[in-house]
Image (cartoon, rainbow over all chains, first blue to last red; front, top):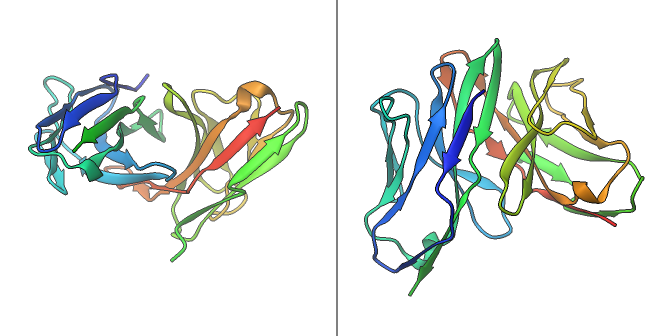
Length: 114
Length: 115
């Protein structure tokens, strides 16, 4: 079945450091890919998305490129801020057996220190 | 614009009690789903629905029931609560059409403790 695998956290960085959070997926169809962010005590919010191969999603300085050949959707940011501290979830949506599913990875906690 | 509303925000149950977690959305989304979030486990799909009258099991459905009588509401029922069901529960909804996938909107979560 469909699945999403993320790098384990926590990831601890100093402010202005470069961020990469790895995400790979398996899917039977042609999924759309997402990154969601969860701030403490809140629900998940969409950060960015890509709906087909080679698409690049971007938002708030974060980027991720849909790589079908490597089944990956790694999240990057050139210079992180303390306010980026949160849990980041990679997710895919897909149609399988005529039914739609939205599946999440295990999440990666990011801690940015001043 | 309320989005996705979950109630209650917090709940403590005794083992064996039953309860219903409520979820309502006002965006006319076809797809609704329930997840539980446990430390180190991410979000695991419990049940989902692609429209009124249609529900299906996710990854961890045991001990939970759902129904979808309207587009707006998707309640999650715990039949006989167990300590293993202590978790944070999230409801999500999205518009979906084959070939067009859009973002999911999440509720604020329900923190459930079973003692």
